[in-house]
Amino acid sequence: MTQLGSSAPVAAVPAKLGRKRDHSRDAEILEAAVDVLAEVGFDGMTVDMVAARAKAGKATLYRRWTSKSDLVLDAVSCMKERDADPAALPDTGTLRGDLVAMIKPHSIEDSAKKTRVMAGIVSLLAKEPELAQVAHAAIMEPRARINRLLLQRAVDRGEIAPVADLDTIALIVPSMVAYRVLMLHLPVDREFLLSLIDGVLLPAVGVRGAAGSG
Amino acid sequence: MTQLGSSAPVAAVPAKLGRKRDHSRDAEILEAAVDVLAEVGFDGMTVDMVAARAKAGKATLYRRWTSKSDLVLDAVSCMKERDADPAALPDTGTLRGDLVAMIKPHSIEDSAKKTRVMAGIVSLLAKEPELAQVAHAAIMEPRARINRLLLQRAVDRGEIAPVADLDTIALIVPSMVAYRVLMLHLPVDREFLLSLIDGVLLPAVGVRGAAGSG
DNA sequence: CAGTTTCGGAACTCCTTAGTTCCGTATATG
DNA sequence: CATATACGGAACTAAGGAGTTCCGAAACTG
Image (cartoon, rainbow over all chains, first blue to last red; front, side, top):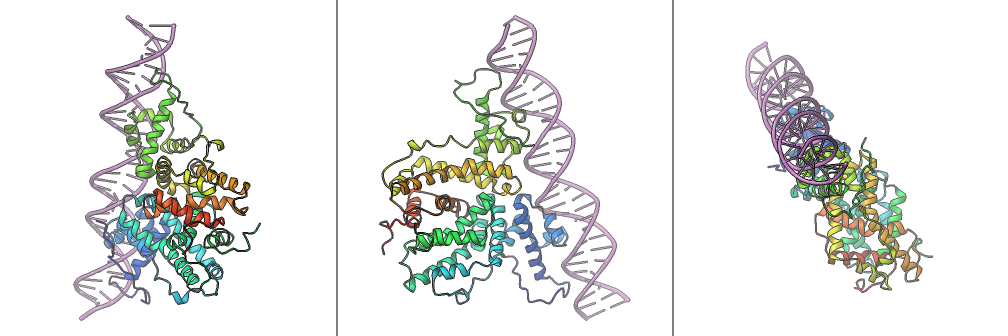
């Protein structure tokens, strides 16, 4: 029945400390599953691949998850990090400054991997609505959430006019990044993200930047 | 070797007129393949499914295409219609009018199906660069091309300022439609498309529409 | 009306992979 | 040291699907 929530990784455990059910081992296996998923997709992925990558036996995987689908569902849902603390987000005083400050090599790499995972399960989503929800919540929504926050702060400080459709605006960059990775198979680099910010997002919210004039 | 270009559907043939190699039969089979692809994706699709849908024998399929991949490659590339004649595009005098005139039930349905096909092969694109190119050219590029044309006309008539990044702007709507269909599994209806036009695309090119005011 | 060709369809082979079982080993407990 | 538990790994079963082969039936050819 591909039931989720069966295992919550806890970490904060030194290393292998025994032969009791080791929940940090779960996390290692799930991480291996995510890696394989990103590389070959759900249908290209075999349980043996995941076991090998995690240096585990296939039996171990089936002791912890009931099926391949169950494993993948858990792996995807565990990709969701704690929501970023709003106080920890950049606060440069301008919307553009905040958006640009979000562009870091680490976040680009992270985003690319998440998008590749998404690519690996896209064809499943139609059949598995539960996975669709979990995947979106874990992979796509966090970035949109941050964008909504930055935009709302810009509205609150009067930098931009109130936006009618904040949810849609916040999806511009994630959508176009996903398109570029999935459909075009082009890399997402700093330059591309800057062109989205300056050429699409900021103009769309009424900021006339250095790019627009002709 | 998954070679393409092996069959060009001709149509313009009354019906079954003989036992010579019937190229309109190719088109029927390819259409069946596209339908199945849209419904279950590449990995969910079996050659038997396609044969059954086309009321053909599996042997017939293998007489015409060397492999499942070959069949799919041909099917996807045959989805590309002739490029729309620029003269046949709407010409209402305003960019918004042209964009809205492009929203027709037929085109919405067509776009949804194309996007579902794309979803069915996304995970393949990483392994099959040839398919990636063909799929993009057949499925995604035509719509972007139309958008580029409409935008360029608006620039030419002085309605909007010259756009630095026309290619990117033309991808806004296709990207966000794809995102909505693939990731969110929400329907793409007229209302959503209008909200993209008025809430994202037109603001991004500097048209202050009726939607923006708060 | 023979001869030819392609057809639809069924039966078949072969391979991959999900899921199971078994076993020797390593570690913690007492 | 004896016991119990979970482990990694390998061998196994079962099912599904790609690709092949064969055959009787249709329909064009001449």
